Length: 605
Image 1 (cartoon, rainbow, N blue to C red):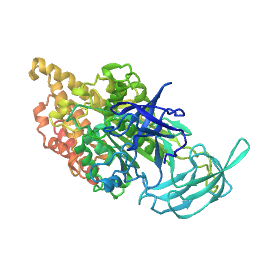
Image 2: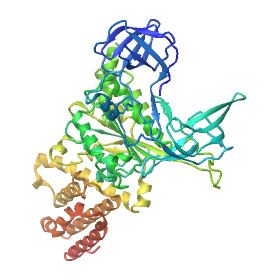
Image 3: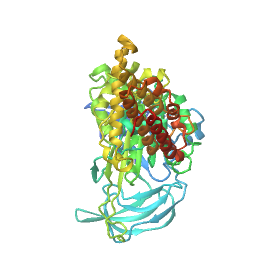
Image 4: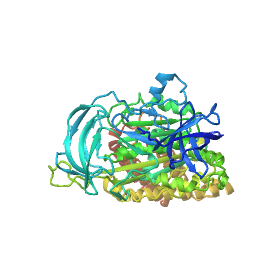
């Protein structure tokens, strides 16, 4: 909650859309939250000069007049963090939309506020720390069961370490004191009372003890991602693509199937119907990992295109602050931002109203810096408080590691990847999933272009150890085959397929199998919508082994049409529909039949 302090009231002297000029805020600081006008619209000070302060208002300023009062809270925009976040739907300022809808109906009244977390619920607090122990910032005091599958750690707030002098157990509300810590600073002892919730400025990254190199992939269940372009736990990725290429569907699949403990979905400036689909589907979808409703591990930030433009910028920071909070508990968190282009448009509009010098295509000159600051809040970390043995019962120190994986959708106008948002995002992320309009027009989904996409994360060792020792070789061979196909298709467009040698036509035939039978995946098929990495390995293995057999058959002058007419080719195309528990056995049996079939041509393994 924002605590109000006596800083003096100001007056409105200028109004330009969501940007308001104020005089009389003598003690104001940059990024202080203010209440504008008689309605009490929420705003934030974004510029201070000798004569006036410039305020970015997060609500519609229609009807506000010159001379109306502005009240300063003396605190920055903060997120309230505690039990009850999961399953909630917030706007960009962390106002609970369901609570606001109950008060005002479908259209939210301006200036309306509500607590982000319910203050009437009792939570069962189970202590994990002992009286008399020294607790560093970030140490776990106790546990609250937030859902059937997730325990919510009540942590010492950053910067508040000290000796634990009192701790209670039982049922408490959010603002009830559960522990007391003696803070020692400058030879003075101050008592600090810990409640079940804490606040944190959304524009300030939460501190960590150490950062680790992200080398373990985030398994998503999407074959083209997990196989060719994996994103690491704690890594960052972007999904650029034009209208209709499937950005939102890919992010929905990631939210449902990715191997993450907590998902924070930020709908930043998206169309209302797309956000409505999320709000309607997520509460009824079953989490495949736990069997619970998907919303039980999800936080939704909804800031649609018809909401105030200025709040889009805040929504990005609100969502990632909530994600960092769960990361600090030691969880694997996935943040999905859809779409960062709308965030960039909000920056451009605010910058124009501030009369700042425009950069490329009218975006502010600091666009690249803002994007870098945002994506750098991802990472795999050693959490604060991990150096201490909080229970004093274990021989080994308690080390908590958590990760925050950040995936942002980008909507370049006309699918032009050379525009500033895409280019500046590419410079700071480790994975690039380029959605292709031509693939989507051919109904090839996910429409991730395998020649333009890339991943910079070194995850090969994990795959080789946990999936198959030959995984990297298989993936490299498949990538080479797809690249060779792209080169041959250019030749075909010039001289036709008859000019190709038999071995080159074999490349096209097997590459087509790789594209249609492996990379193509339906998000709506009961079985194929999620593919475990083990099944993906066996599917890739049999296709690449088949390619090796085809090459040997051509060497013995076996006609290519005779090889491709084998009934086993059609069985390979149907492997994606096999249930997971049957996949490995059936694929191995099919592999033996293929081996026997080529043996009839005189080809031995």
